[in-house]
Amino acid sequence: MTPEEIRTRFQEFVGDEDYINFVLSLYDRFPRPENLHLWQEKLLTDFSNKFGTDPINTTDVYKIFSHCPIHDFELKPDKVVIVNGNEIAASIPYEKERELFPLANVNAPRDLDRFEYPESVEVVYCERCREVKNAAQHSS
Ligand SMILES: [Zn+2]
Image 1 (tube, helix red, strand yellow):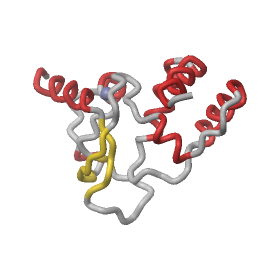
Image 2 (spheres, helix red, strand yellow; image 1 turned 90 degrees about the vertical axis):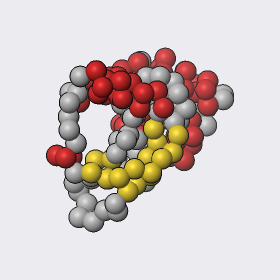
Image 3 (cartoon, protein in one colour; image 1 turned 180 degrees about the vertical axis):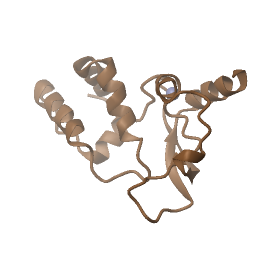
Image 4 (cartoon, helix red, strand yellow; image 1 turned 135 degrees about the vertical axis):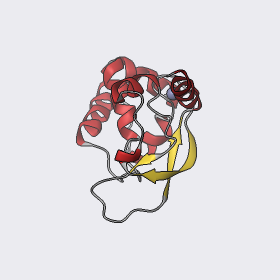
């Protein structure tokens, strides 16, 4: 299966809601952790077993699920500043943001479990998410 076929089959297999959750959870920690969540690994194993494909390891996961689950745009790398969560002006509720432009990633929230962190961090973003976020902020 090509990466695109895997994405399509996987989305059909787990359903839209879990698919969106699965992909967004790959990219919502900064810097990116080495291991997937256990529930993510379980979905991948279930998928491989069901379709008889090779197991999908962590490296492959990021190559395969490299598209915004909302807009299907290919994700691009960027370097953004890390901010304290309290400093982000939340003009749009988090739930709406996750629904409309989850991968804008114009900055990265600080990982509160870490004592030390760099000023900036590598992220991936969806161009369409950034456009939607921009438009939403300017109209509010
Ligand atoms: Zn997007």
